[in-house]
Image (cartoon, rainbow, N blue to C red; front, side, top):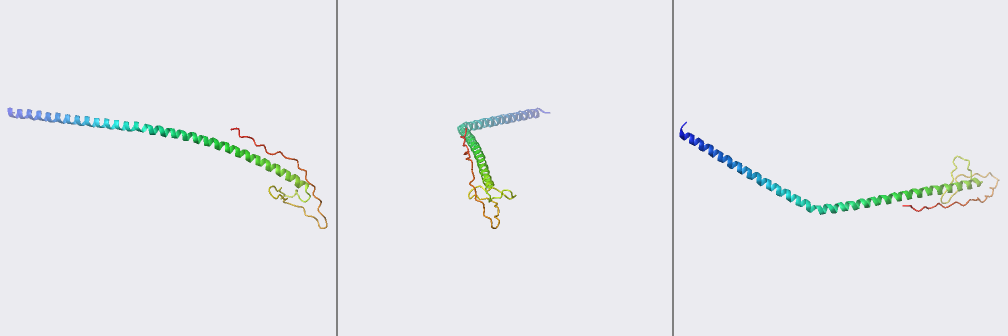
Amino acid sequence: MSTTAVVWTVVGVVVLLLVLALLAVALRRRRERRRTERLAAAEELRGTAADQQGHVAAAARRAEVADRTAEDARARADRAEHAAAEAHRDLARAEAEQEDVVRRADDLDPRVDTTTDDYTPVTGPGMKASTTREATPGSTPEPTPEPTVEPTRAPSHRADPS
């Protein structure tokens, strides 16, 4: 190899090394610029998140109030359900007491046949016996004695303990 060829080879290698060095510097700067841009974007997002903290706290307070309101409503509904159940129990007792009185009256009334299978004591408005005895021709119905009814206690209304 001649000296000129060696010089050109050295110059070529040096130029190649300079180009590679310039590329490495350009790539490093590009990475640094991207890193700086990403850090700036991250800081901007953190700032936006910090700005939203007030909205998040307000939403949390509204959710807490709504939870308490719902719990209060559930408690009121539970109390109302218990009161309704008690009222239905009182109604059933009152109806049973009324039916007992009607049965005793029907037992005393000679016009009512309480021994048939279809006998049902009639309660409520316009209470009339459901099954009557037929009078035989030529007979007169017996006078109806006044039933003696024991006074019944009115259902007690207990105050809601809640």
